[in-house]
Image (cartoon, rainbow, N blue to C red; front, side, top):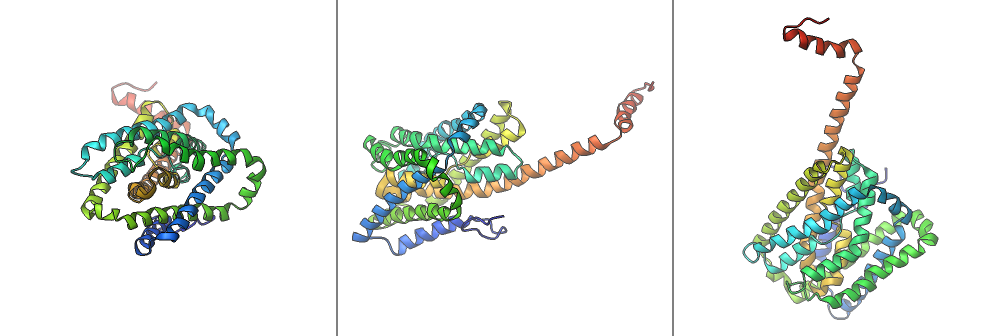
Length: 359
């Protein structure tokens, strides 16, 4: 089994890529890009974002996506959780400003609620929990595809005039140029470059994550030069972690019980729980760099913290779901293996216990 990029030992409950991101933030704090170096880094970051979404478009199989539409109820449920329930909770958190969260961190929290769901980790946790993996693949892909359009539109609606780092309707043009057009180009060229991408999947994985690290370095460098980190105290960061823990708990509980009330099977409920309660760091970071510009450093901090939190919590939940599925399977297997006479003995004993005699 291929070892993931930036992997750490299984006993260490921290995502290796998160450590790489933290190291990038530390590098930006010690050696921020200034002057001509900042101009070069900004241009490279812009190109990296366009490349990321070109690769996203080239990898997404249109045929598989259309085939997944057959399970439309599940996908609509995940999309509603991602782009309706999450934003509503984010807007409700406005009451925490300024006593619990400063406006800058609240803007990042609200942006976190707008980004699409993750793909890779949703699939991994659904598989570990014995859920519907095919549904998780399609749900994550649909969420990423819809998010390219919906996330900027929602950001324009809820962040404009609310400390959104200068975000305005004019920011939609860079979104179209840097995100949507490269994605469409990737889809159009997929027929010719798809086999090449498949053959070099491992190398392109490094390109993906390296591009995101460059985006993070550029954003946090700009923040260091402008001194935005003096606006946040360690106490406020602890408050942010507490708020995000509550947010994750609400979404995990809501997706699990909501899917059950809607009549989904156990396997589908697992897919909905993991796909509908999580947020994509890979999609959110590039979008933030386009939407917020120099203010992206603080804007993506809540997303980075939430991403690590959801990985740790969902890893525990997935193991619990898997253990429960294993127990249920063993119980059903043991019941099916009992002789017919033994399975009939229980009803006869029950009738005898209430005063009747078996006939």
